[in-house]
Length: 337
Ligand SMILES: [Fe+2]
Ligand SMILES: [Fe+2]
Image (cartoon, rainbow, N blue to C red):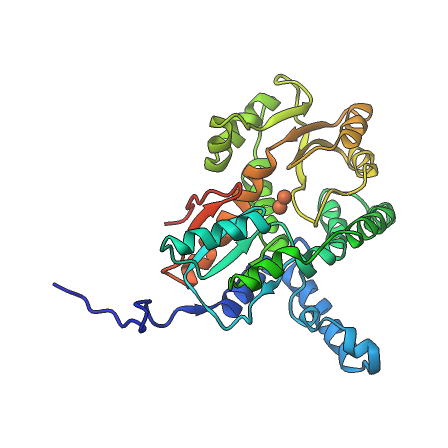
């Protein structure tokens, strides 16, 4: 039996989702997994909306209207109108000029690519990275750190990130995507929220005799196994295989970028024994040693890949025909059937 499918003049299936819709859905899935909780996020958005309605003159002109509905300043559509049909995504953890040229080469060879999906922010999403860091206070709050303390510790670090990113050449990727005709968007915090909540639920909440058992549990997750087989396994940055884990938290998975080193002592005082991290900086490691906190560096790329896969699993439920071409550190592994 032959099933006839309605197609466009180019042979693409009709009723494909628009990029704008797909991105809006990604934002909603991010809110569902947000450590602040959906209610608090919606309250925050309402306040921004009310404030923006009262703006006038240059304040109104410079205001980013995206902030009235998208609570993730480090994630947005960076090229295109949002009206493009999307079914085939070129997905990468880092997509910059070389990867956009690769996309163009693949298209030249006949591959269909509807849009570029980045994890790490570029363009305005990168310019506003520091504005995504505030939610680290909630992540630490759930780990038992009083919010007034972490907020005070976070402020100088946010200012440093703001000044550093401010000096970057921020708009290269979006320009090359525009010139080569690729719509592009990134999902940073919405994907990092997925991996944070996944690790909290599937790793942190379980019982272990020692850190060796924690490593084994992490390695049972397909993304970590995939990267381990390629020589990029989760490692014990501080602590040994026979060390007792104590209370385990995944506080270094979401919140824009690394928080201040002072967070280690604050977590130790809150009774944390082991911190799972995507990437442990040398300064953080020094603090972990000083305060006897175990640290597991879970592989940055495996962790970001897991977050993107969990988000793509959700998006695939809405857009059944969603297909990815995997580049730049990303590998598509489906978790839900
Ligand atoms: Fe990430
Ligand atoms: Fe990352």
